[in-house]
Length: 237
Image (cartoon, rainbow, N blue to C red; front, top):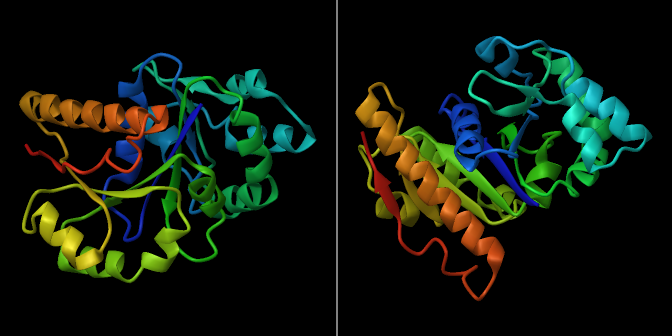
């Protein structure tokens, strides 16, 4: 199993969309778990039911389930993506994560595929931080703005507690990948821009595929773990 946590430090930057698209590009058998303590948005966005979802998975995990049972709480979207959606209520989702996230992670550890966890905003005390600490990789999606870069630069201690954090920018401008890396002292993988046209979507898909290849290569070992992200990826619209 490869566990990938996807979050952000500054919010409103497309982290949930990237988590969904990454799961879709990972192919059949991949699973997305929405675990944003601020509440879920995917049920409404994807027009799927709230149940079964994270609340039910958390309840079952506390009593003990195995990897095969996890799929009972996932729904398949029209795109063919398997998703465990979170309740839109921050209070309910946060309570479920605090009570059972460790049990959920233990259950999905036996899933023989890629599991992507949308952890929402990465901040002190977040109920979803355990997913980032337990993950094989943490993708930190960021706006390309002064405010976002300053936020990244001042979250270094928090990000160091996340597993193999890599920053993905949602825009190529105004700052280059190297500039952001120098300012934040973080590993900046490159740019995956939003898509509004078919051409832009093809570019976005190519970037997602490249990111997945590097994540998989890093997990395969063979001495590539430190080198997997040496070459920044610049894919723009």
